[in-house]
Amino acid sequence: MLEYNEIKPRKFIVYEGEPFEVLDSHVFRKQQRKPVNATKLRNLFTGKVMEISFHQSEKVDEAEIDTRKVKYLYENRDQYWFCEEKNPSQRFSFDSDTVGDQIKFVKQNSLVDVLQFGDRILGVRVPIKVELKVKDAPPAVRGNTVQGGVKLVTVETGATVNVPMFINEGDTIRINTETGEYTERV
Image (cartoon, rainbow, N blue to C red; front, side, top):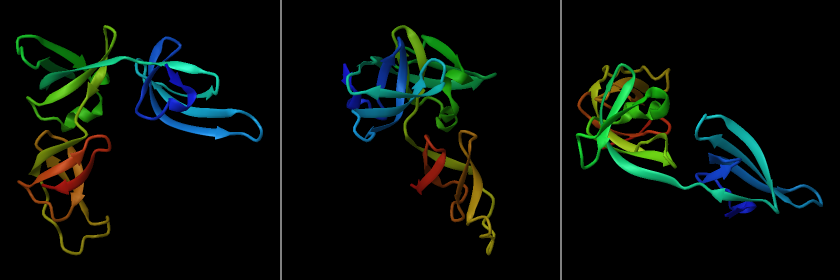
C-alpha cells in the first residue's frame, strides 16, 4: 500500500481495479486544509490520461507489473514479431498500438522488455538510449544555419532524427528513445 504522498512519477498503481502509471504528482496544502496530492495518471489499458487528487487519508495499492526480456525479430504489415529470449521457436506478435512509437529505434535481434499486468500484456518498453548507425545523411551546406544548424538523417532502422550538421553517413549516434532526439555521437 502506498500513502498519498508516496504516489510519485514513474510508479505504477492500481486505481479502481485498473493499473495506472503516475506521470506527474504535486503535494500541496490549500490554506488551512489538509495536504492533497494532485496527480496525472495514465491508464495502462486504454492510454487515457486522468487528473486525480489523493487526500491525506487515502491509500492505493502498488501495481505488480511483471517484465520479461524478449527478442525483437521484425515488422511485417503493422505486426511486430518477437520471440522468447532463450527459445526462438516461441514466437508471438503485437500490433502497433501495443508496441508504441519507440520501436522504430530498436534494431532487429535486440532485447526489449514486455510489461504484463496479471495475464494481460500492457506494452513493450525499449531501452532509454540506443546506439544506431547513420545510413543516409545529406551533406552539410556551409552557412545554412537558418534552421538552427540541424539536418534530418536516416538511421539503420529507418527512423529519421534531427542531428547537428557535423554528423555524416556511417557515424554511430546515441538517441534518446523517449523523446526521439539525438544526444551524442559515439
